[in-house]
Amino acid sequence: MATPSIAEPGAATVPHEAVRAPAVGAARKQAASSALSLLPAFIDRLRWGRLDAAAELIDQMSAALEASHPAIAARIRRQRTLQATPISMPKDVVDLEEPTRKFDDVVMPANIEKAVMDIVDEHRHADELAKFHLKPRHRVLLDGPPGNGKTMLAEAFACELGVPLLRANYAGLLDSHLGESGKNLSKLFQYAGNGPCVLFLDELDGIAASRDSSDVGEMRRITNQLLILIDRTPAHCVLVCATNLPGTIDKALMRRFDFRLHLPAPDRERIQRCARKELAPSLTPGHDISILADTLASRPFPNLASVSDRCCEIRRDLVLNRGRAVTEIASRDPD
Ligand SMILES: Nc1ncnc2c1ncn2[C@@H]1O[C@H](COP(=O)(O)OP(=O)(O)OP(=O)(O)O)[C@@H](O)[C@H]1O
Ligand SMILES: [Mg+2]
View (cartoon, rainbow, N blue to C red):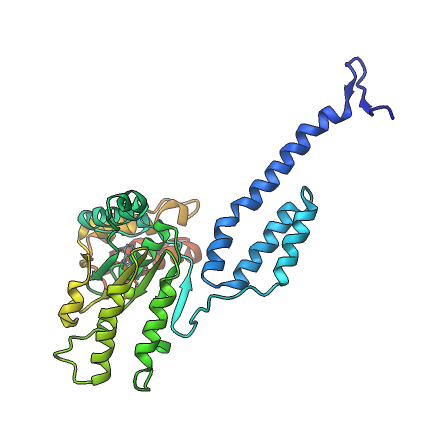
């Protein structure tokens, strides 16, 4: 059969296949690369036993391949209905989150900024360290007064490392039945050991009080258990703990941390940086009110959470009231 051809008036005759082949090849490549780009997230979701979330990616992969690789798309779709063996996620004791906030979003003193970059750097170069029988340091204690970014920084560690954030859920973890809390803690650490992650124990003072001061036997046992579990935590799991009350934490436990990072109450410069971020033109389309950051920086804000709240108030006024009261709101003393 003669090869169909495209004949333009006055143009040389071009075989049809010659035109189509590169275009088809490019489309197939594009489809394959879209599907492949989902693979790391897919593996990650399977690793953490998040089967529903993994199934969503199966749908996306098969949709990407439908036109160019229909047979593979169909095979992938069939997998969706298969029951994989779940790595059981102890949902009662842990919340798994996909972090979005980065170091850039957290306003920190310069020395803390350097320390957090160093920690991430060690983890990014874990293979090189291993050649010299070294492991990245991975146990971090964040302390400081409320509302200055401890929780935010834990999330940012996970985001920068590209790993999930596993947040201990104390409501499910602490059990009134003797011995159950210790078992729950073990479940949590065992799950976290599955792969690279940030395990976040917020309000550490609540579960790791000094054994000298605690007269509740069960609390002492939990602290003991925690010591053992922290010692066994593999280096690929970055343990981030946070507290407002470092003085009440068990001394032996304090020694376990590779880094102790203090997030202090903000000075003028950090209030200003925080306000500039919160009032950035990208958050206030069509307006540049970042100049108000200077006004805010002259007020004695006790923490950056209240700076952030004040900035939201300013932005609300901008949306609802055309910004008529923004200067007054920015100059008001903190509550
Ligand atoms: N360092 C910071 N940089 C930018 N925003 C901050 C910072 N600290 C606090 N904020 C704002 O305040 C909110 C609350 O902060 P966060 O929960 O991280 O504080 P915290 O130190 O964990 O407080 P707590 O001790 O009460 O748990 C954040 O979501 C953010 O909007
Ligand atoms: Mg917090």
